[in-house]
Image (cartoon, rainbow, N blue to C red; front, side):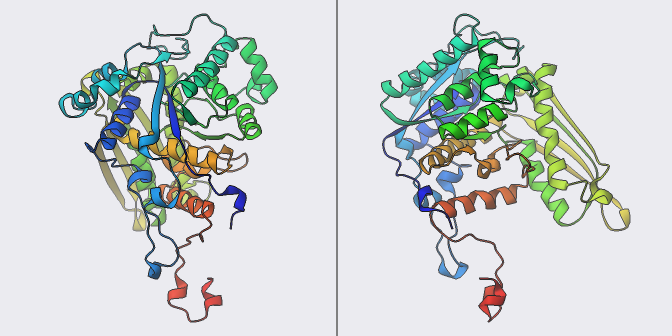
Amino acid sequence: MRSDSYVPRPAEGRLGILLPGLGAVSTTFIAGVELVRRGMGRPIGSVTQMGTIRLGKRTENRVPPIKEFVPVTELNDLVFGAWDPFPANAYESAINAGVLDRHSHIEPIADFLMGIEPMPAVFDQRYVKRLEGINVKPGTSKRAWAEALRQDIRDFKAKHNCERLVMVWCGSTEIYIKQSAIHQSIEAFEAAIDADHEDVAPSMLYAYAAIMEGVPYANGAPNLSVDFPALLQLAEQKGVPVAGKDFKTGQTLMKTIIAPGLKARMLGLDGWFSTNILGNRDGEVLDDPGSFKTKEESKLSVLEHILQPQTYPELYGKFAHVVRINYYPPRGDAKEGWDNIDIRGWLDYPMQIKVDFLCRDSILAAPIVLDLALFMDLAHRAGMSGIQEWLSFYLKSPMAAEGLYPEHDLFIQQMKLKNTLRWMMGEDQITHLGLDYYLEDAELAGV
């Protein structure tokens, strides 16, 4: 049972959702929320909006909607802000992204989308080589940039009369940066900001600014952003929840569904070959080897953590895992993820699984942005801070406390998420043991 100090406060007033990056994902998310608010669409894929949660025994038939069980912010109380290195407003950006049908889903809310204009971004082309920013903050001082972001946050909150804010990184994948000495303490990191150190990427400045302003921060890309000791220490000190990283959308979503099934049945794996083609801005950015390296690290970690080759060396000790991402402009946001899976069964007989997932990247990501924003705000109102491991459900490369391996199994992640909600509200955890339905002795049943 949880302490009463973690009961979430009511969701009163407006919640501002700040989005570094006003591209395909952000505009699909913003337009989707507005369409739902007007009764012109359904929030399919959003756990906060469409999910339920079982409480107590199965015989009690208590299965309320999640949004009625925990005090998440109402969609009508959401307001949106963004930064982007391109000056296009949300209407122009949504048209350019080509995700949503212009006639059905953009033009009916054109005035609303036109009213969302991106603030000048903190941008340095060294970290995203395939983009050239023109709507950017002046100069090269990282300290000045960080302070400008903090001022943007304060100004947005005041202008839009927000009670609370959250920030979800929806920007492009930055080049691969390995943790170094500057990331190990707050003092070292702030000194690195002042020295314009090359290992301080723009996304880290957004995370730093958010935490300093008491704003929960979630990283939807695979680059190093908030997942290092300095900012984790700062988040704990400031009482701010953080989460990341990399939205779990297409191919990796399939891996976290299929791989747990193979492991549960103790089926062996010889190899898993994955290739993707996509043509949106994300694909263009990932066409750069530096940015691809960041994404590859995120994608490759999934199977190893789920299958635990050290624990099951006979089944998973030597499997080959290959990931390819190819930029193909005609495909746009309609990404295709193709998987060839070579497995082994009884007496080592080989079998294969083929998966061809023709998905829509931003359509899958938009509800994740919504849920992360609402749940991060909920966590903040519940007095939770630091890593929110219970939100791993939404992320390809989830963060975990030092000394813990990250949990990648989608079904374990879902149980962790729902049990956290039960814990917040003082309800019993659900273990699915179920012996109390069959054994007369309740003590033996473990209830």
